[in-house]
Length: 182
Image 1 (spheres, one colour):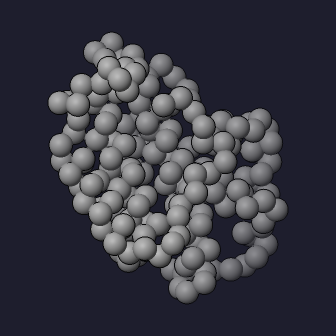
Image 2 (spheres, rainbow, N blue to C red):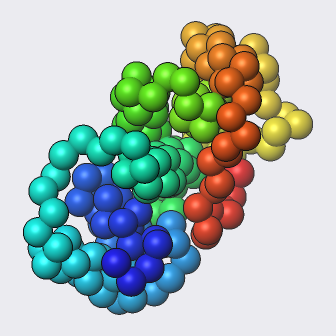
Image 3 (cartoon, rainbow, N blue to C red):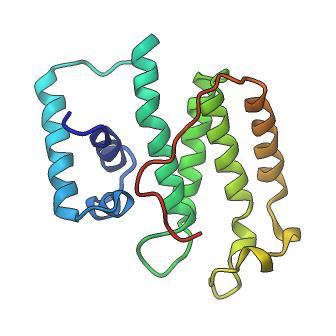
């Protein structure tokens, strides 16, 4: 594929169900350019003739390099929507957590996967405190810590401590273009 971002963009579009416009906003590129990138990625897959199957070894590491940023971008869009009037898109944040849990179930000893799950859970735990009744954003300093989601916060901290124990030295970089409002 032409660009390392192409598999991520295609996965967001085909598997994540995001529109080309949403994917373009996530990468901070024009929608037309993203549509072309996704079309080229689909064609490259068709032309390769490679069957779809569960990867192993080096292929698994390469696949994680696509799956983890997809999970991150889906959750980021759920946490701070780039379109519409709602600040949160809860269904996307929930889907990202589901995906992170699924990958964690397959790779429980991977510190990057465990860290991503912890980040998703901790971020989601803050959601109730981030918005007021009419849906406006509440600054971090003004957030009421009492309304933080206790269950997700506890699970996120547990995953964080589990990941800290692995110390593989691998981290999950945030995808380029993921610098949106808090």
